[in-house]
Amino acid sequence: MNRILLVGAEPQLRQALDLTLRARHYEVRTAPDPARALTQAATWDPDLVVLDLDLPDPETVAGVHGWSRRPIIVLARHTEPHEEVAVLDAGADDYITKPFGIDEFLARVRAVIRRTPDSTRPHIIDVGDLRVDLTRKTVTGTEGKMVHLTPIEWAILEPLLRSPRTLIERKQLLTAVWGPGHATDTHYLRIYLASLRHKLEPNPSRPRHLITEPGMGYRFEP
Image (cartoon, rainbow, N blue to C red; front, side, top):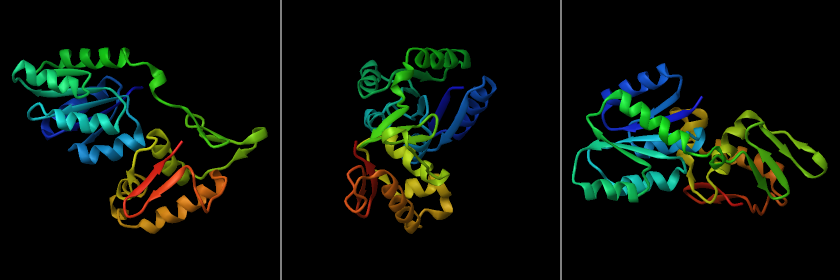
């Protein structure tokens, strides 16, 4: 089942596409704007991002392209051809002019997913001498020794590993793992990051891979 993240400014269109895609057996999540889509993209890793814009905006597309390595389809109203070209040059994989027919939309979705190789989604990532399998949810050390991680540790670790060298803000991680009501409970992250470092880092007191960016968040350094 392919995962599709719908990001858009028009709630009615977003809801209609959500229902349509679910009826075709896609797994769907939604976000009202690119800023709130970042958490979804980092923790859920969609196969496709559908970005609904009022007008073609290359800067927004470039921003989404910067934090998501997945293909992007842009929905926007008709403008001059050079503006559509600018959106494609900014990182969009396809451009659909609004209004559009649902059959055309579904065909474009199928085409973009079909030509995106599965290998673009990393499954096995090395963290120092450890090998992390994100599909099987296993961590293997030297001589095949297994390292046990709790579900919450996995929920924190996976978005970091899927976006190497990318800052994941504390609020985004907290919201994704514990919900919006815990967006300011930064001590949760300190406790679990300390546990992850003890399990994954050669020297937990001087981490090489799970890096804290003071006052901002965390990133994974391969």
